[in-house]
Amino acid sequence: MVDPRISFAEDHTREILEKQRQQQMAAFVAVTEGEVSRTEERIRQATALATATSLFAGSEALNRRTPPDVNALLAGVKGARLMPPGMQISGSHGEVAGAHGKFFVRYRPEPLAIEILSLGNVRDDGPALLVRIPVDGMSGTNAAGAALYMATSLEQSRVPAPFAHEAEIVALGFAPEPLRAAKLPKP
View 1 (cartoon, rainbow, N blue to C red):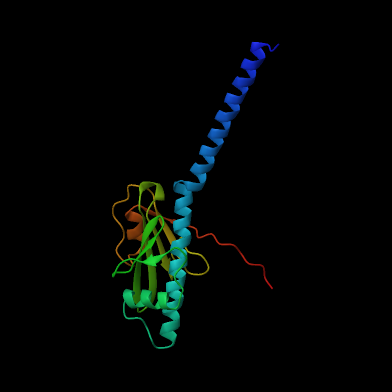
View 2: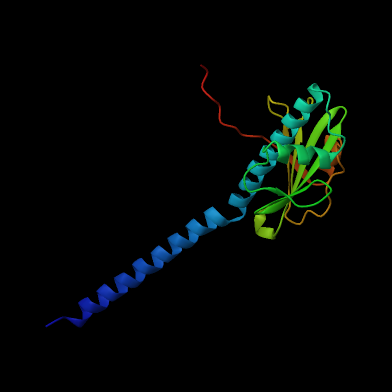
């Protein structure tokens, strides 16, 4: 014979454990699929795209084949198979599509400069981002001469003009952020 109170206690315990498991799963999904995770992914993609386009443009300039405009630059990057994984050219004016955002490549051949403006597809994709290479003496730079600016609000509706001065970028509601990179061990 089974005591009903024990059965009730076991059922109640199972319910509590199941609720805890569901809460843990919801928290895990929120962390791995939420705004922070998607923003971090867009930062990685924007910096990879900035790196690929700037290296290609620099190499072509050294060989006296400077791409005349952003379309030629992106065609060259694609042709050299340097387009970052999961990204593809999606427009004729320097637009590249990623899973969680649109990336607008801004290119200046002389003096060579690249900017990547990234806007999320939906609110959960995070704030607007701007990656700039090279940067001379501006805050937000790292040793490689790159800068990252992040909109301070998800409702950011105005974006900086191409190659705007840092003061204009900050006035539009973007804040310089450090570019974090893994340091490789010295040989």
